[in-house]
Image (cartoon, rainbow, N blue to C red; front, side, top):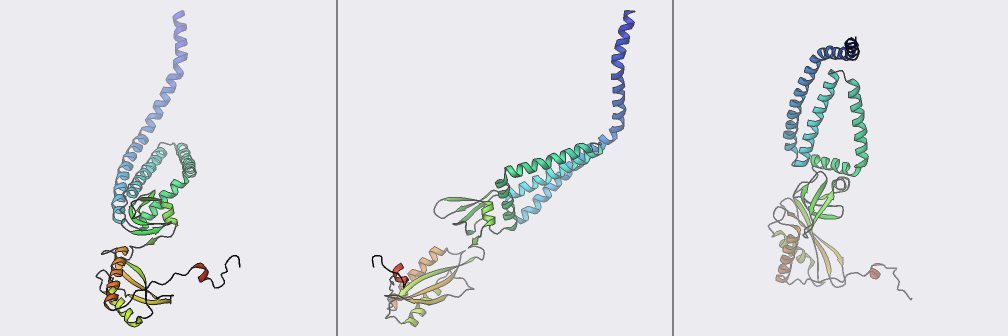
Length: 296
């Protein structure tokens, strides 16, 4: 009697489990084709992600030298294709609710990260636009955000300048992208200005001819631009003038060019008995005809 009771109790315990296992086995047999299809689909999307990543790398390498941008977009492309594959595979397995939950969770996570790292995200996006639009390139001499220097590197987060004084300046990409940029290297030419003055006793026409000849003798001038000479004012001790000339920046920098022109001017003026005279600078009181002195 006791053994029969034990068997009956055991049967009551095992029968539901066996029924559940039978149900799962039947469901498993039904889902096997879908499972195989989902696995095959994931392999296909894995291959597509690798191909898409390599394709993006080849295309972007032709238009941008920014390795960080190319690597980032390549990785984003690969992850995006794999994510699409995961969603399709879950859909085949009948897990549509899981797909919806994943999409909603990804949206919330992206929104939270966007607010938390707003400045960092802005810098990355700005760096991407700079790399694609290429308003500046490595080696360009630019002026922006109050800094002047040569571009050493263009990263997604920042642009690094050499300020010609031995310091390295790192500017956030968003400041470069949102603020005006003066690119001195864009055209390959640059205008240089030299200010000078001559004595009142000098012949102005001869002085102009001598000055123009001195500048035109330089071998670093642009072939497409003319040298400009203009008298600007009558100073106390001199008649002042300005010289404007364009240089080929592949041959010389503006500082060296200006120095060479000043030496050439002095030499030519001395040869032609033209006296260089420095005019007296106007003080603020002299510049303002209505200026008054305190105490009067």
